[in-house]
Length: 241
Image (tube, rainbow, N blue to C red; front, side, top):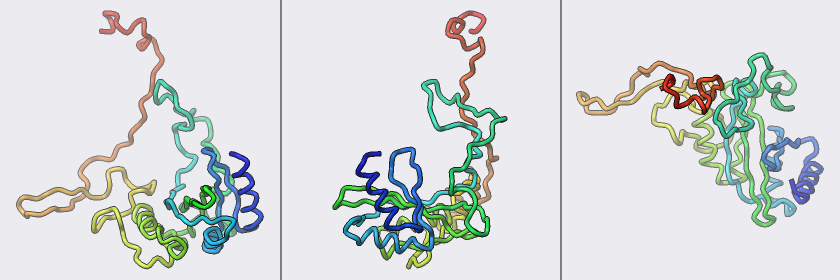
């Protein structure tokens, strides 16, 4: 991360001491975690104060951390040979980073988070914020629509796909799924085959919804095997066809 972003990080940490905490980023983006109670005040200051001037909300998205760190496939790096990165099942799953495990105070697990991508046109800077939703069902967080009007559809999308409620949003309706859709498809526990299937019924002359008829199955990444059958020198021998 360059010196200008490091200086920006220091000034933000000093200005919002006790309200934000810096989060490590693998992609080099400046990221801060914001306490839910301070979200609106911090966002308002980042937009209005001349030193920040983050006048644009580029994107807002939800994140479901329910199975974070429990994956059976290591996807941190890639190889030119394909998906040959299965974890040793005896090795513990990677640890959840600090701040992404237990909730504050009551020990409730943090599951849903909302991430905000901000842009300052005046200073040509980008900033990413993350805040945790209130534990329980449904997850809830304050709407930032009064700070950035662009949050309107972004928050509706996060509600539709993750079931996150945005307190203060004037028209929180589904945005991408069909009328009467059941569940929230971007949640980690949502079935891969969905809950219903749709088909056109010629007899009724309309589209009908029915329970899913296909059996759920788990897709396993392709594994590159290394035994003698796959040696290049033996590939075209008669006994191997």
